[in-house]
Amino acid sequence: TSMSGSGAGFSFGGAPAASSGFSFGGGSTAPAPFGGGGSTAPAPFGGDGSTAPAPFGGGGAPFGGGVFGGSSSASTPAPAAGGFVPSAGGGGGGFSMPAASGGGFTFGGGGGGAPAPAFGAANSGVFKLENVSLLKEGDAAPIVAALQRGGISRLVLRGAPVDYDENPTMRAAGAAELVEALRSAAGQLREVVFEGHRFEQPDIVASLLGPFHGSTALEVLDFTNSSLGPEGAPVEVGSCEKLRELKLEDCELGGDGCEAVARALSGLTSLEVLDLRNNDMDDSAECVALLAEALRGNARLKKVALDEDLDVEALREALREAGVEAALHLGEDDDEDDDDEE
Image 1 (cartoon, rainbow, N blue to C red):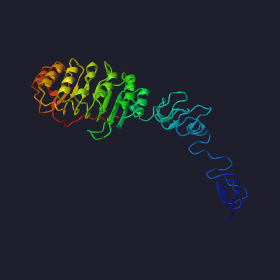
Image 2: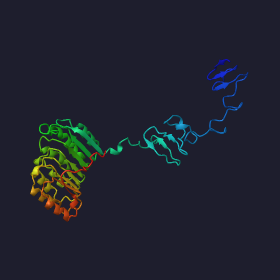
Image 3: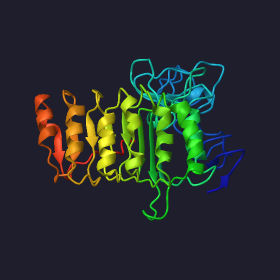
């Protein structure tokens, strides 16, 4: 047995191989290509010999229009009876369902259409940053940049874990740039979380809330576990007519700070959640009485959280009159709200 090659392909026997393909056996003439039957070329795999079969998932044009994912002079075939084709356009990304019947999907955007949204675009309205420490000029740069780009409706800034009594997470110099950015973004922000912060001076809190005075957008304000103190009570919230949730648990407000908050909430009928636990109210009957008056008639209340050692009968009666006595929660909860929706 001899083996010879010419161009591409192999032959076994006496004759050289054809320019392509495999052949077996000898003879004076080149054998027919494997699978053929003489002078005529065999039909393509899956075809009937007369016309070339349609490309995978396509309708007559080469798969992908010539180059995978690229464009060509011919129009991109529509998916037929399932399968998929790459989009002919050069821009965009992601997946898009074809308009033609038969199912399937295409990769890439249309030739002139807008690009598909980037992965995670559904959360583009949220900016969340952990371990925040704003002590000097420039520290707020990433937060400022995000707010200046726009489109932020939920701002979550959690303070760095520092020594509670000695080291602040915010000083006036570090917070100044943030305050200016909040002025331009306040009309879009619906939820603002300053959780776990230590403010060097109480007037920093007033500066941060100044841009929200009279806001018709702000719905949720959360200072949980932040060192507000009596002088840092966020009384500016009284002008936010759409405020639904005010979370001030463990903010060192004391009786005076809680009373200031209660006065600020008077007439705020949009309020649904108020948390004043762990603020050393020392059984402040005056604060409870002020809360009862501020919340009287508000049938939208879902949760009013206070310490369990307080005498809350006046408040309970006010809530009962509004038909929302069940909104009163005393002591710690087993079903804390989940902050991480992104």
